Length: 229
Image (tube, rainbow, N blue to C red; front, top):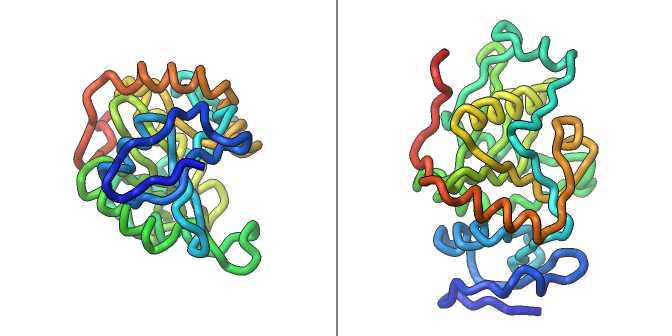
């Protein structure tokens, strides 16, 4: 197992990851290390009782923006009289929502630790991490957050308090990323949920090739807003 230290941002090649995708352990969550990890197709995922664990699974779940699928029933939920969707207005609240207890964490745990919350808030302040918020009657009811570098968006987590709130946030995000010519959305792990939107599994080697191409455009840093129509 490759062990990182706080003075070296170097990661091993992703093909050295374990069969489960675990590549390295240790280091820290400073912005420079996080951005370097994402550029190489690596992301942190761990809980409070573990050291920082860095992953690069094979295969990888991705959503190419041009392949977005929206069901007929969800299209009706996209009407502006159902939800209001914003960008980068409540980043920390979105992360806190994603950290709330869920059925898959029966003891109330979450992988979004305080350290993760602070680290990604810092990335947001630097203009790399972004949130998509869904509102209903002035109340935050769902959303998601992730990291954008070049023409790649690395989706981290989503939550919902009202049916379809996070799905609407995702669709609105992907449609905006289409307009901005983003080439790749990293979903990390495949699931039936992301597959409904057109996500697919591809070999890690193919993912790295797509990622290298997606990183060529300049970064779209700063606070995001939806394009006016």
